[in-house]
Image 1 (cartoon, rainbow, N blue to C red):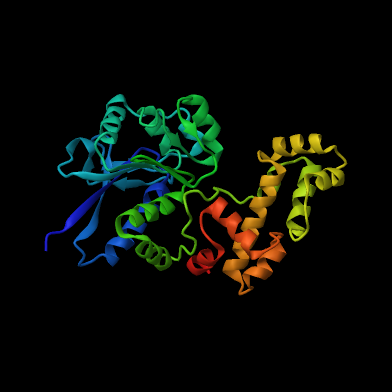
Image 2 (tube, rainbow, N blue to C red):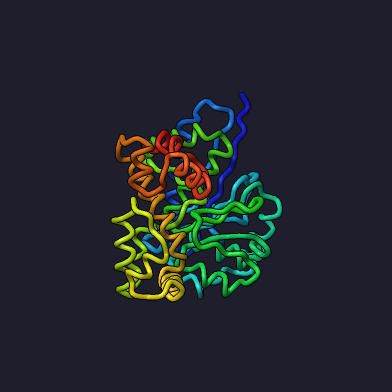
Length: 325
């Protein structure tokens, strides 16, 4: 039986964030184990960008590459470009010959991907010009400012735009790898890989990079922090902006403005997200019925909860519990 081997190349860049490579690599390795005997499988390659095959990582030790990108003698299917620590990325520039190579590859490969701040290297190579992309949420504004011709979204875990895939912070590379495997071998297979790796949440690309419930800890403005804590404890109630404004001793207009300034999201959207996240936890951690969960989270009915789930996370409560419960 002739095997159809998809060659996956990981670039090794000096001071690379190790998990950007190791995370996706382990996901593909697990898939390869499960695909033994299958004609469609993967082969992984770790390549340096120059003649130095022992590449230092941000963790303080080196990783050994099998060769350089300049000596490839196989057809690349998917190229994955990792990132470096956030504090380094703004001043980190890849050599011009490497950027040219990345750009040329983007025109011929089936898939070209980045993990975390690796999106900056795609941007430096002009691969992302005119495209939608994401990166680690702390660096989204920096990416947009440095490359204004890129439509930067700061919330998704990963984004696909044609053959270009960009993902968010570090562990999202594993979510991206699962999505790539799903494209190749179907959803059931990718879910099985997620379960084998105890990645009990195979997150969709549109899922938020960070917990909305935790974001109230990011504001030092006590009135808004207090309101966010109150919302989390009273989701089953009918919550209006007017009511929240009154609790904060502000006018509705001023409250909405201050809330958006502090939380980077409108009060209504914040409430929706907290309700969804709380419902997701109930679905995975309890055997409560959908009706009870809908009541506890303030959706009003299980039908309305289903509609909100479909709108925001593109799945139903039933499917969410089936996959992750």
